[in-house]
Image (cartoon, rainbow, N blue to C red):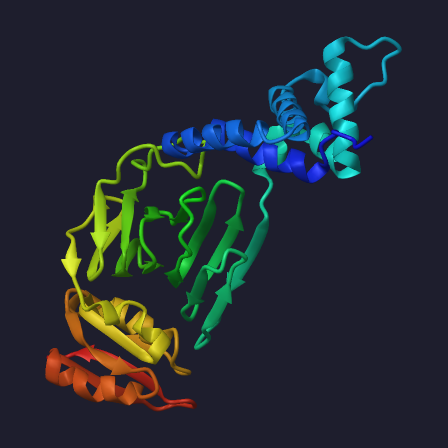
Length: 338
């Protein structure tokens, strides 16, 4: 006679759907409930897998699933059912259940990466879901792909994203100044000089400043509130500790232009532009007379392979003079014209 006991793979699929009914956004949760009902009706084994997954989820906080799992001489019906479930999960499932059952399983990342680049380095990385990340120089971020969400925590630098569409797993980018949720495909997020900048080349992204990101600690991947700003292709915005800046437009080709060997500045404060160059040049540019230079802004596109073109053109754009101080190696200094 053919066994109707569910396999571990069946129980894992059921846990995935059960988890979505509890942890996902309302629309995704409703779709998961409907899919779960259809899948449960498909066979007796599916029905048993759903029952097992629901017991694991409901028993996540029960004392029988904390620390150790005793073997009582007499078991209640619910304890016996739970033990049968653990047996079907196998050794790995027992470890998961001991650590917190269904919720523990749901919360474990499927993929984790710590990515970073140094001076003059760039890095391209494709995730397991086929989303693509491109890191500019001096960038550090952590990536985690879960069953119900995908998260990138950007500590410093800039990343260009090309995100694979998956409505069941929102894609989030977090910095110290706010959150970004992907509603489209290609965009950049940078974290520099006390602010976050978001620029969109294709599609749409929602932007929340820090402290206005919706959701909760229990559902970090679900932003329940509508974003205060939705950026379309060819739009950008800065976010700092004061909140959202003004939305502005830019050519979509300028988004992540460093991947093609260009630094693009659009009314960029001179100290920030110099810091961008210093991510790539072997000998850093030094800003002198900083109080006078801080308010100056620069615009233009410059090839990364030719920083001298930037230095030679700078005095024509701004009241700045470029000097080379003696030494080994020689120091390049930017000073105010007096």
